[in-house]
Each structure stands twice: as C-alpha cells, then as structure tokens.
Length: 268
Length: 199
Image 1 (spheres, rainbow over the protein chains, first blue to last red):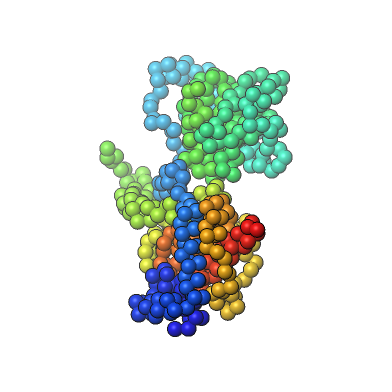
Image 2: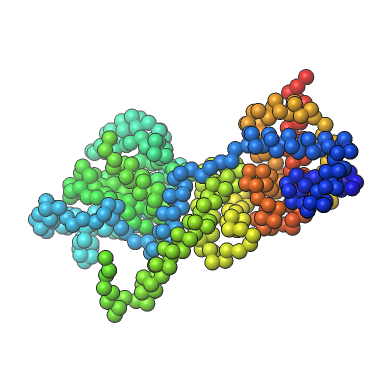
C-alpha cells in the first residue's frame, strides 16, 4: 500500500466504508508511515472538533406544525372557513339581524367581505367609486403597497410612536399591538382607503413576509368573529370589533395568518 | 357524523375528492412516520446550505410539499436519503434564484482531488481554537457549497457514502474525494487561523 493510495482512501477507511481487508492494509501502512499517521491524527482531530463545536440545528417547533397544516390544507380545496368552530348566531345577533333589514343597504359594503349572507343582488348598492368587492380591493391595496416606498409612511416598531401619528388624520383609534413575542415584527403604518373610506394599514412582518392589517370604521357597529379566506392566493383574515373592521392580508400561509389574527384578538 | 350525499347535486370532482380523503389521510400519516421524522435533519441541511434560519424554514416547507407530492415515487437507499435529496434540490434552487451562489470555484477532480498532506499544524493548537464554536461554524460556512454539503451530511447526519451519492447525485468516488478535499480545506482553515493568532 503506497502513501498516495493510503491518503486517497484514508477518509473512506475512517468513515467505515472500506472492506475489512483493504482496511487492514491501510492500518498496517499507517502503523509504519509517519506522514500517513499524521494525516490520520488530523482527521481524528477534525472530527472531534466538529462533533464538539458544529451544531446540528434542530427544526424550530413551529416548523413541524406549519408543515403539517400546509399539507392538510393542500389536500382540501381552499375555501373560506370560520376561524372558530361554527356557531349559530347568538340571540342578540339573531334579533339584530331581524331588525336590521332597514339598514342592510348600509351593511352591504362590509357584507361583500362574506361575513354577512346578504343576497348578492344587494351588492350593487355600493355607492363608492370603487365598486369592486372589498376583498378584491384589499388584495389590490396589499399588492400595491409592496412596491416601495408606499408600504410604510411611519416606520416604527413602537406602537407608542405609531398611534400618535394617526392623530388628526383619522377619526378613529386603530389597535396597534406589539406582537414580537409571537414572531410578528411591527414595521410601521400608512394611510389607506377602503371603499372610499379613510382607513389605515398597520404593517407587520413574519420571516420575510409583510402582513398588511387594514383597519377602518364599521358602519354596522356589530362585532363579528374572524373568518379566514384565500383570495387570489393571498391569505386573508377579517373580523369586526369595537366599531372597527379589520382585515389582515398577506402571502404567508393560512396557518401563520391565523396565528396573527388570534394574537391580535387575544385579550391583553 | 355521516353526511348523506345527494349524488345528483355533486359533480364528479367533489365525489372523487370525498372518496380520496381516507386515502389522503392515511397517506399523510405514512408521510409523517417515514419522511417528517427526518425534519430535524432536513432543517439542519438547509440551515447549513443557506446560512440563514428563515430561508432554511421556507426551503424545508417547500421541500415537504414537494416531497409529499412525489411521495409515491419514494425510492433509493432510505426514506431519509430520498427526502434529503428533495431538501437539497430545494436549497440549491433557492441559492440559484437568490444569486447567492458564490461557488464560482468549479471543482476539478484531477487537480483538487488528491488529498493534500501539506498541513502540519500542532493538534493542541488547533484544539485551543476549536473550542470557539463560532470559529468552527464560520470555517464550515466558508466552504464552497459542494464540499459543505458532503461534510454536513457525513459529519453531522452520519449518512453513508451511498446515501450521500444519491442526495448529491454524484458517484460514490466523487463523494469520497469531495469529503477528503472538504476536510483538507477545513483543516487548513483551522490551521491557518491558529498560525495567524499564535505568535
């Protein structure tokens, strides 16, 4: 066994990939050759170094559930589904619905988001110049916002900077929450319009995916549970609370958006 | 709860999807137990190849979806090797599309393949610096990707040459020579740093 041959096969030998007889030949040569013995020592040293200092990174716990969710979602057609287990309307919701026929027209703007089962024929009542359904508008605004520099007008990760920035610009107080503990980084905010109404967009980010949270006054003034949908491939979660409409739009998968919506709605 | 189906009102596709569901769920469970058990290995490889935790997560998610789609084609020496090949492909695609692919250094088997034995550093000196894990990580990260992947697969995932040859799609002889060369480069890097630091 020559030195060149030994050195060529040294790694395969140390990795246990050689047949025993070749291994014995190499072992014999290494026992007699200082250069080859030095190579063996360097290899053993390197292995010890790597085992001691090179980490084997473990998958983050959220990754496994994200993968499973995505695979399950991939098996089912993407349809709008309620975030919480579906319940019938509560008694006061039912009462309100029965009494609300006179203001259905006013509700239609929000109804096109799919939360209300308003007959489709009434959707023509949209008085705004923008007659597209609200969902379509929101996706269009989301896409447009991604082209810099319009995404953020007030860049800040501090809700106490963003909230005062709204003062004097709008006649409502949007919720701006720090969700960094849940993995959503607050990037800032900008002014928006939804169906001709003044609105704001609060911008978050998870990994490299921006999330636009649109907030605008709710005409109906009724709270409604969050609903997730997929619109032209974008994930959207929409709900109403405290006289405001909320709609989160992003290209993250539905699972991450659901987490985002839940985090925003969680009691403080 | 069973829902009586009124077949007349349901189109062929939705019937098909209803019928496929039990199969799909069994399939997903099988995928979990044969493929997703290697999620740590997948993430580790992606993390080392892309040098970026967020990009690694995205790549592993993509790879899982690809792997699930082609689950019926599972073949090769082990499910782990098959899955790792998908992960590795996804990472290489990601590197190319992001133009991070700085391995302009084309590996030449004839010129670079012979294990160089020119490094004569004192193992004790190496051991001192090796205690700094950041330094070791940086040395691995600095390797051209074709050496880094075989080092990670062998040293951290302890995969066989045959498995590595399937994952990287090169002959076993090439796996052997890349491992040798990769280890030489690492030893040199570690040794050179020791020389620079020590008087």
